[in-house]
Image 1 (cartoon, helix red, strand yellow):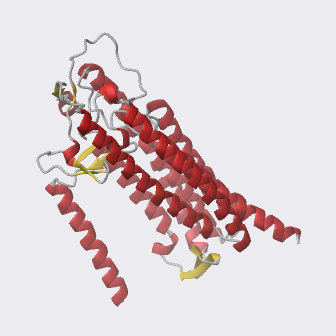
Image 2: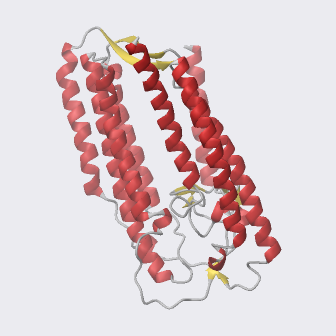
Image 3: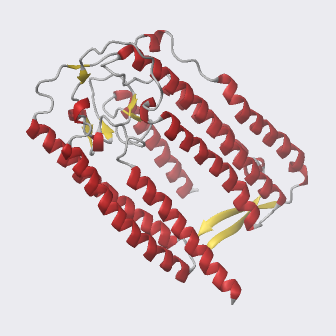
Length: 377
């Protein structure tokens, strides 16, 4: 009886924790902590309108609705998850909250855009755009030293795999999530199955390194009022971001090393599995939180050099290039592939760039081809 009660409490706590964290993120989404202040709800506004009445009203309406919905969904999903003994209720509640947040975001976006148009917020402003060519001629250097931890973890994984491979049984078990929980399926022991997670480490490190290299040359959204200070701050932002991403790659590689060790030793202990996956993921979340609190969107929380005279310019009104309530950038005249996000932290792709379209079509073709080959074989 006590064991059953403990199980119910565990599922209730897990569902409650998942939904609480998600609710906190959704509630904080419109704040400058997670969203650039100059584009509230994805709408470009002049600096003097960042705290306009229309903007604050939309934030208030969004947060009030999210708070009520999060409280109701969290309580119901936690109770249902405990009764059924599953995390499915938490997952369903999360999808419901995300859908509601998206609808509220679109409503707020339209409200601010309407107020901006009716009030003529850009009628008497001097709009402009700036570019720091030194970001191309003298870009921020790739953080090679910060790739060492990820490479060391890969080397340790390869060495450990080579040592244990001759002693592995004919079949090895791999975990798989199902509706009834985690199940283990048996596969013939081959180099591909035994070193599959090690290969994932290599691919993960290569992908992260390629993304970092691209971000270091991505277009910068500089402060047109103080362009020199904005360029200096952007360089610091790139340094922090690049180093953090390579650190995250090392942590994820460490998690994959732990999972490989569990697979090689056929360890199926739930607490050990949680520790192997949970500790690196918590560390990753800590790095992301540090970036958010210390750096901010586009480096907005970093201190810029003082003393530069204000140019009197405001960022140009480029809302026409942003679709989906400020989440999708489409500009065929912009040669940039990556541009700073309007919603959230980081960068997004320019879907109007032909290179992006070709790359996307190629990836879809490869994915469809792989699915067809797998279905035929």
